[in-house]
Length: 89
Image 1 (cartoon, rainbow, N blue to C red):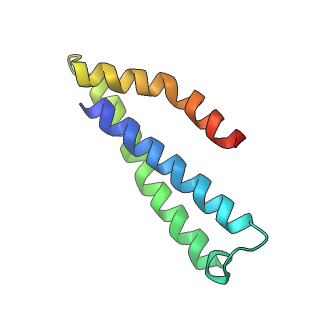
Image 2: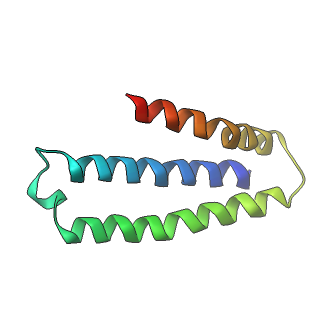
């Protein structure tokens, strides 16, 4: 189950980064999204979420595999494809 939670947290961190980057670099970005406070806040969230996600995945790989663990492993395998497809649109 920890693998599945780690994959979900990792995908959430990547989604947050893609959203914030797209918002920050947009021509019609709101003033609050162009400031240093926005960039620092998002950066701080990413620095907190990504290592926790990696730790959950690593912890989950050390446990006996359950059906939820296999779903997490499949999610890890399909995540790059989903992210690639999301950035093309």
